[in-house]
Image (cartoon, rainbow, N blue to C red):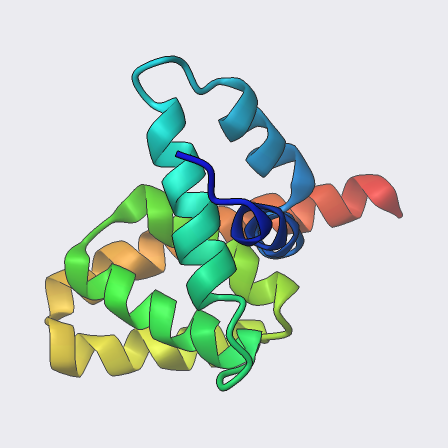
Length: 132
């Protein structure tokens, strides 16, 4: 299916939020079975939804961290913790979001979310240490 401009817009936003290397690798690794999903996600999720102007990217990251914690999706949470940092959230704000999820999503979900967020934050610290 040809998504046209939505794909291009989505690809740009997706790269800015999640990182060019990760996105380009996901697309390059797509095969005949998964390519349609990559096109769909890039066009609809990133182009049609993240591309809307009513909510800024910071707010969308807050919503994502909350929902992904509730859904208990650790891989996606790790990805979106990094995206939240790219979108301007601080570690303190991420911590508060995850604490808030403990009340509304349950303590086990929040514990897993903290564990996964910590892995990403530790990795970011290592990367920043290598660059300095």
